[in-house]
Length: 277
Image 1 (cartoon, rainbow, N blue to C red):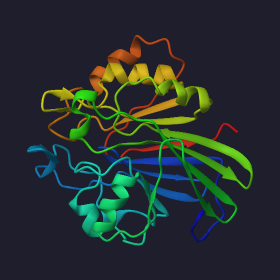
Image 2: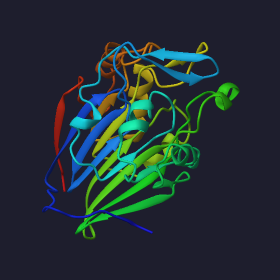
Image 3: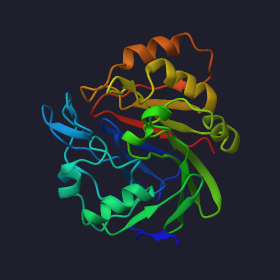
Image 4: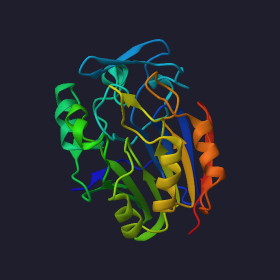
């Protein structure tokens, strides 16, 4: 069943924008849809519990708070973890918002009073309609940790967002989620060519001595595999557990022969993009 959200204006399919709040939290505006990703709004200096006795301190203040967000149509949540859906989000987000995520997160969201969670398994899709605009969110494979510590972290998904004006495909956006390099990334590039924009989680997050998100060099390799037209690295410096920042990534990108254009955003930056179709 499609999620139907009220249409209040004529959608713009020629141009969209991305607003970087911080960490993996962004606002995506395209085709009449306003989408919030991985909402985390704790202030700098506050701590999140990551499980198994591990904590992380937020180092960078988010660019805005929930009260300053524009009206939203839905949330896309890669996984339910302290640095991706925090106590502020649980307390202040509109409980009626649809949240597209995985089954593990839907169960936890329900306990927090969010009844409209839509769970996807890998390669499953959820349709969202808004007047003549249509969005298909498909769960992409992601691997948050090496096999020997996989059980210590919640399951995670990437997302592919395909935007349509009626039946006309207009834009394709990939969000990696917290993932390492893994073999199924090749399936993403094979099944979903012509990715217009990719938001890639970086940071080299290190928990209990194990790296559980991509380093800068690994991000570039991921981009080489999936081949988006433009890549925007996010999730790179907000928490004390991050060990590989933008400098590592920029250095790796300079030596890559990939045709992708890398665009770098800081907190509060708004990146405008255009549809090539």
